[in-house]
Amino acid sequence: MKIINILAIALIFVGCNNEEEKKETLRPVFFQKIVESDMIGKRSFAGVSQAENEANLSFKVGGTLEKLHYKLGEPIKKGSIIAHINSDDYEINYQKALASEKNSEIQVESAKSNYNRIEKLYANNNASLSDFEKVKAQYESAKTMLKTAQSQLKAARNQLDYTRLKAPFDGSISKVTAKENEMIGGGMPILVFSSVGNLEIKTQVPENVINRVEIGQIAKINFTAIPEKEYEGRVSEIGQSTSGTLTYPLIISISNKNDEILPGMACNIVLKFEQEKTTEKYIVIPSDAVAHDEGGDFVYILKKSGEQEIYTAIRKRVTLGKLTSVGYEIRDGLNRGEMIVTAGLSFMYDGRKVRLLEK
Image (cartoon, rainbow, N blue to C red; front, side):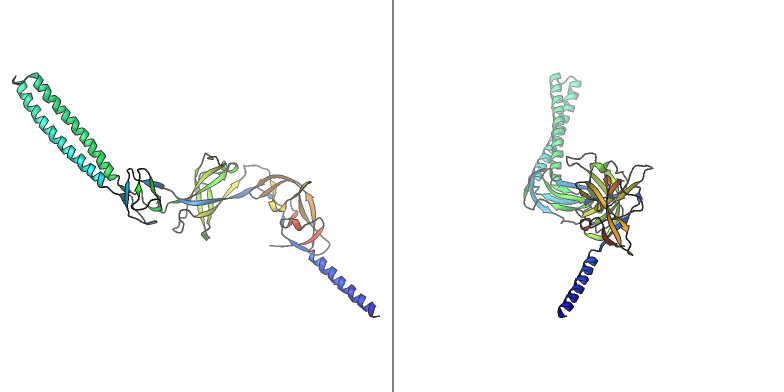
């Protein structure tokens, strides 16, 4: 009798375990109802903010960098002196050129006076033609030397002025590549100068997208450093060269600018695209809803079972079209109104019982 009771109890436990196993196989799934689409899609691209105006500044002459007058990020007005190099040698050359010009002016005045005197004597036949031509040549030579001295003075003045680096527009220093007391050569960049407040976004788009981008097209921008805000921009420049990377540069101007946005910030850009005008409609499903095996592509459609709120996953072959920004085009195999499983296909099999997740 005890043995019979034990067996009965064991059978009850086995039955309970089987029921638990059946409950465990009832998997909740995400799903989507099939609808036709006009193929308005979105594409996301990584970008970075940059100043609309940016320049690598350098001195036109070489020397020892004596002073940087501003720090990184400090506002600088156009024409302000940003830095200067030691100007002693250039000052000496300028003074020499200035003295040479004054000496040439004196020589011209003296030659002119002598020329006027001999000219009068020659007119009264009191001086020979050779004397007149001699003083005339001396006068012309003195005037030529004065012009040369004036050109040299201008060049020396420019060289002295080049020892001071001035801001080409309103902005700030975004990067410094030289230090004070360092010897630098003419044309050697010492800092990066960026405009203030005027920022834009630079990104790269692939070749299959560039022809669909238009000037003025609206873009949505989200910065990694400012996650709580969304910015709007418009395409302002479209590159026509890939530069060997198979992507094309794109510049987007920010519409609602903010002081929180700084040059060099990473962001995500979303552009909306619409297919060419057509009367044809497509069925489009998420790419995660499509599985593949040696026989081709398939999905799991959902059919109502005899039990309330329980569905059966049925494996169904499909013919795929293009992979778009919103998923696969379905050329054959699905009909409007059918429901498909959109996630967790690796746990699915033909005939599996599931329940639907509404959200």
